[in-house]
Image 1: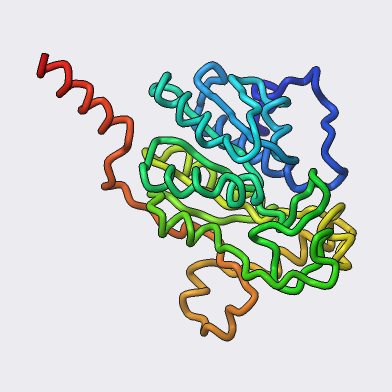
Image 2: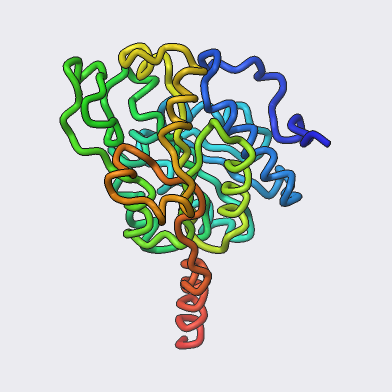
Length: 273
């Protein structure tokens, strides 16, 4: 049976403003299916975004929502979680929003391990704000600010999150919605800071500049660039060049969740009076 999407959507805001074929629609669908599978009520959910194409998602979602400033979605979400630790807090962000101007907030949220879920839509470019190259743009790819090809080495967001201390890290892509839903559901259900990187298509800004203007061609290109993490373990570094492994990358259920630790500090402070 199909998930009851309307329960999680503000239908009076539909149709949406995303470009036809945009992968963000697939990601929102995976999110709503994951919410439904976990039987989470919209009243117990908060969805927070920053700036960029992904930032429009809270406007269409029927739950507590915040559309915040560029790169600051995680800090706003941290405040929400502290104020309402019994609620489910989810952040949706782009690769530029999360790993450029918001990069410092990202690494410290990973370090703290606060119980939130961050979905990073990685479309390898600044989609809404002009097509500039981002921290994840592949070497050689063209963008508005690199018309002859990007020379910066891109971030590996999943490995960055793992190294910074996130206790759940996964990567999926919009060409495999079933796997993506499963990875998002696992992150939502995890008690700690969860990061799910989603490789997605921006055929309007990235695709047109890189001979992948058709959304199907770009999604197919992304899918062919991915390797399941189990298969990747058996491949050489040469075979993995230019590839992204997808699946559950890291999970640690033994790390203390930040809100729990903060509650203990409050208890000790009250006992000392």
